[in-house]
Amino acid sequence: MNQLSSKQIAEVQTANLDALVGLANNAFEGFEKLLDLNIQTVKTALVETQEGAQKALSVKDSQELIAVESDLLRPMPDKALSYQRHLYKIASDTQAALGKVAETQYEANKHEMTNFVKSAAADSGTADAVLQAAIRATDLLFESMRDAAKQMTQAAESSLKVSADVVASARQPSDEQTSQKAAQ
Image (tube, rainbow, N blue to C red; front, side):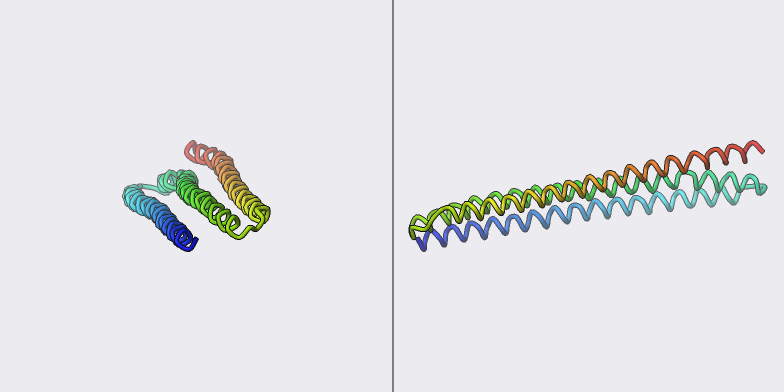
């Protein structure tokens, strides 16, 4: 049994190392996406700031300046919401990838542990019921953790929808005010 146990332990350790590398790669990919999003956001903001400054410098009266400012500020809530959506997508995709690696690793470890304990139980004559109870308890824990993650994702989606609704409702009065000012 010692040779079999050593082989099984080595396989489990290799699988754990592979899972750790997979988790690290997924986390790093998520970080890269976040970094790309932030770089693109800063580049866009710089270009828009330069264009806005040029427009502001070319105005001839205060009414025109107010119109330019209004035009510059109007898309801000939509841009913030778009950024939030991209951020949520990156986090959601990264969480899903990490969850998939964790679930795969859990299933592999469960299988290896079950085989190991069964062979040990057969050698020592102990009952299999304790093993089955432990596996069921672990399965229940894993399922509850997965359900909690789903609930957190649903809460984030709900929050994003509420934010979108607030931005949409906030834009309507400001659009009406801008139209009124432009008419004057």
